[in-house]
Length: 457
Figure 1: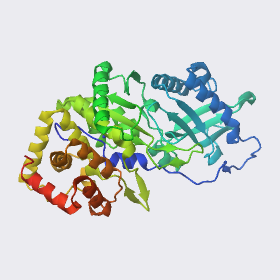
Figure 2: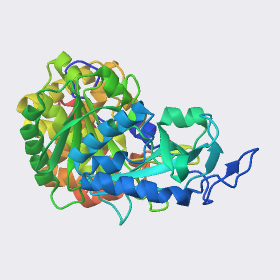
Figure 3: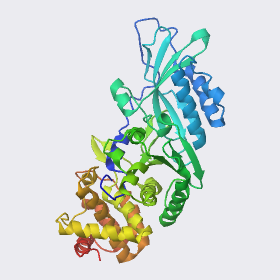
Figure 4: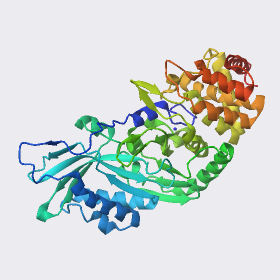
C-alpha cells in the first residue's frame, strides 16, 4: 500500500485520498454545446457510440485492426499509443470493455481546426478478471476525444487522458481518472492462479516474482477464510521512478515507497460513480526501492496483498462535506504488518524490538496512533506507528488466538471514521471489543497499552 530504511512500504490514506477524489459532475444527460457557429453538423454523443462499441468489441476479441480502424492514421503518436494499450490490455484479458457517453457534458469546436470536435468526458470501463461488484459496475477512466468526419465517417483524431492533473487544468469532469499503468507504459504480463503480474521494461526478471505472489495470495486467502474478497489480483512491478510516480498519480513521497495498494471504485452503466463498495484492487511494487533497502520483496508483496485480499471488507473512502471518511488506518496498516510477522519470525522480532525502542524513546503515549500520523516521510515515528498498530493484533492473538485477531480486524476495518471522530471513541468500537474479547473498549486499550509498555513480551 516506507520511505524509511528496512521497512516494507504500504498503501496509505494519502493514496486513497488522492485516488478517490473523483468528480461526478452534474446529473443532466446529453451534451452542452457551446459555439458561435452552426451546430447542425456537430456530433451528438449517440452518433459516436457505434464507433466506440466497435473498439470495445475489438479489444475484447483481440482484433487489433478493428481496434485501430477508427483512428485518424495521420496521428502517428495516437496510433502507436493505442497499439501499446491494446497489447497490454490483451495480456490482462479483461472480461468487459465498454464506453459510456451518457455523461458527456460538453461538445465543443476543438482547436485543431474546422470540422474537429471535442467530446468530454468519454468514460472507458475496463473490468479485469479480478474486479467484482454489483452487476455492470466496474472501474472507469475518463478521456477527452477529438473527432472529425472526413468523407462522412466519424474518426478519432486525438485522445487526451483525463488524469487528475489534466482534469484540474481543463476544469473537466471525470468519472475515474485515466492513470492506470496500461495507459502510460508498455507492459508484459504473466498470469498464474489468482495473480497477474505486469512489469514494464525495467523488470526483465518478472517470472521470479510469480510463484512468490501466488504463494502469498494462497496464504492470505487461507487466513482470511470465507470473508468477502476479490477473485484475482493484479500487481504492477517497476524499477523506474518515473513510472512509479505516474502510475495512479502518486505523490513524489509515495513514489519512493516500496509499494502501495490502490483500491478501485466503479461506475454504473450511466457513468455515475458508485461509491457503495470497492470493485477492484491494484498493487504496485517498487523493486528499485526494495533493492535500496535490501528488503525481502516477498514481504512487501505479502503486505500489499493483505490490503488487496481484505479490501472488499473495508469502509469505502468518501467525503462528507469535505471530511474524509474511511477505515481507521491503524487497523488497515497494523493488520498488514501483523500478517507480515506471521510469515517471518525475524520480522516479528524486528517489529517487537522497534516498538520497545520507541517506547523507551518516549514515542508511545498509551493510545492508538491517529490516522493522520501514517503519512509518507522519513520521520521514524511513522515507522513506529505501523509497528505499534501491528501490536494490536499480536496482543489479541495472545489473548484469544489468531482467528479472533482476524475477526477483530474484519469488524474494525468495516467501520468508518473521521479525524474528528476516530473509531476508538465510537460505540462501534466498544461493541467490537465486547463481542470479540469480552471486555469494553477502554479495558482493551488499557490492557494493550500495558502489553506494549512491557516490551510486547
